[in-house]
Length: 258
Ligand code: OAD
Image (cartoon, rainbow, N blue to C red; front, side):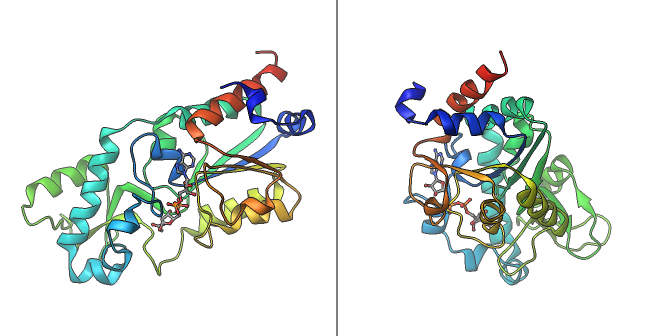
């Protein structure tokens, strides 16, 4: 992609290059080009499935087979796909800043698989699972073994026989406090913040780019569509993250003589 087509002013390019502390806030849109559906788009998960039925603790407790099967279906999709050029561009980008953190609402593990070094997971990680009774954690392979042994799709702890659930945040549940507080702290201190592929609607995660902007960070949004955050951004790049992020990294690289 030709950067001139993006129409970024020299002043803004200079801001992108000179910043040192960077916080990247990501949502489902960054993984769309890998083949993982978003939540609220026309073909989004919440258009076809009900979060009330599938993404809260009471539903899981009442119908663990249904909820477990849905998460296994999502896991199967994730295992079949790869990080896309947007995830890879963020791995490249971290080389050019002294302080670089990704805080993601995604549970798909793709930032880790791409090789990003500092990833804060605000909504958990679908590949991890734990027992709701004794808290025992199950690695992806341990869980797969248990899951495939049970035809009824209900996985139980090999220690206490409690139900095993995905390590994700369901509606009505608290976000992991360490990841959230660290993200808020990074948001207060960063001088450049990216909001990529998120409708920025679900709080408290959606507060993060807003806190960054309120504390003086230069806020960049990458999204093909307008969001509730768009009016507060310093730079709005409309398009697919997988095309725009590699082009941005090329610009940042030049300053560093690469
Ligand atoms: P949404 O589905 O709400 O928003 C996805 C965003 O990605 C939209 O703004 C799209 O315009 C944008 N998008 C689509 N394709 C894109 C592309 N190729 N490049 C860049 N952007 C693109 O997903 P989230 O904002 O992540 O929470 O949703 C937040 C939370 O709501 C999720 O973490 C999940 C959900 O309920 C929990 O499960 C707790």
